[in-house]
Amino acid sequence: MTSYIIEPAVPASLPIRGCDERFPVRRVYCVGRNYAAHTIEMGGDPDREVPFFFQKNPDDLLTGDADFPYPGKSSDVHHEIEMIVALYKGGANIPQEAALDHVWGYGVALDMTRRDLQGECKKTGRPWEIGKAFDHSAPASELVPVSEAGHPADGAIWLKVNGETRQQGDLNQMIWKVPEMIAYLSGLFTLAPGDLILSGTPSGVGPVERGDQLDGHIDGVGDLHCKVV
Image (cartoon, rainbow, N blue to C red; front, top):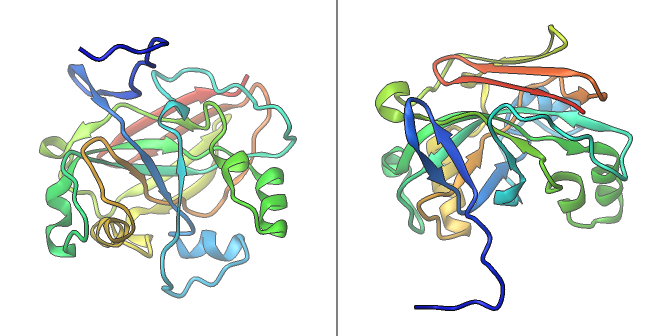
């Protein structure tokens, strides 16, 4: 038996709809600018270019509709509603036509972003972690398995803040579809069971304040609720 000088951390995991078991999380990959309107609002070109990815830490996940604590060192924290793609098989250089066979299920997440800090990183050419991978930066819903959800390729995705719709789009507006994301990402990293992919956000991203109630939804996948505190 392996012994450790300190107690190992409990593995990050997500709840599963209608099940007492949980989905263990290995890595969290996020694809950037995957909806044309959002790409434009962020100053990018919506034409299909090579997709880019960044990572959040597995323990950034915030589950169970828990409160989102407004992070320090920032005065401009933004919401970004996204679909989770949860993998139960991995590999390298996965063919696009086989990519969906690697998906266990789907969920709803928020890619919370310290936009002011991310902006400074962009200006100086530095990594984005302080803007994207801070504590509690990934509120996430329970997962729904493919056996219930299928592979949603269209359907509404939206976020309301205090009951007012802020973001609204359709999964069919994704520039890079789920099989394409998996195939391309597996050429950069060897994917493994427990990996998550956050698949990009529609337009309408914007700031949150303490006291805001965030309610997100994806047709056929589920709902996410959290309060900013």
